[in-house]
Every structure is written in C-alpha cells, then in structure tokens.
Image 1 (cartoon, helix red, strand yellow):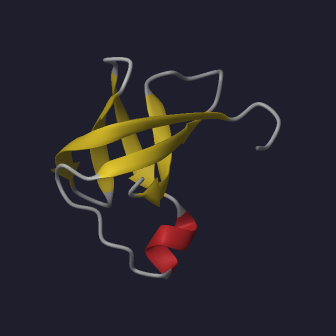
Image 2: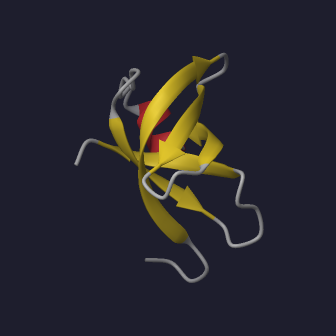
Length: 71
C-alpha cells in the first residue's frame, strides 16, 4: 500500500456518465468514484451491485477511484 492511500470496500449503487459511479462504502458513507486507468485500459466492466475496492486520499473523503472489482 502506498503512503497516504486509504483502501475501503463498497457496493456500486449508481452508474453515472464518463465512468463515474456512486459507491456505498461498508461504513455507510456514499462517495463519488471514477475508474482507475488500468480498469479502463483493460476494459473491465463494472455494474450495479458489484463489490469494489476504492482508493481514497486522506484529504477528500467524498471522492475516490475504483481500483479492483470483486472480492
């Protein structure tokens, strides 16, 4: 894990344009996420209800990026 990165798990609740998603985290918060570059590059599909791992910074707790699909 890189220094300063926070990893959390959640479920996709809403799909938005431009590969953005609303994710409800396991702790109950809901954040706005975008797909990481490797997931776009390898065309990994993410659908509603999928379990995902989200990477966040300690500076903004309302946004993140989806780095892994599944569990």
